[in-house]
Length: 117
Image (tube, rainbow, N blue to C red):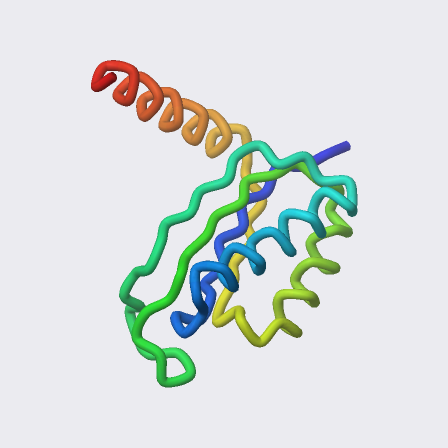
């Protein structure tokens, strides 16, 4: 049975736009190659960190929401740890309430965009 997960990772701010996109593409490809179904993806952009990490005060945030087998999480977290472009990452398993909340939130954003268009 597939569980639904949400992973947010922070990339170092010294990356160029091209390098940032390559990093995101790398993790998207890893997820797909390991059988994950990406439900939602969001680039949060450059944000200030709550506290310095490796003497950096900002970082590029990116979110993946996906369905996958539980053993995939260990594999991808090892890859996150080995990648020097990643400052921090966090993966959480979503319960039915969190999944419903995320879908409702995305629907509101979609409706708001349609109103503005």
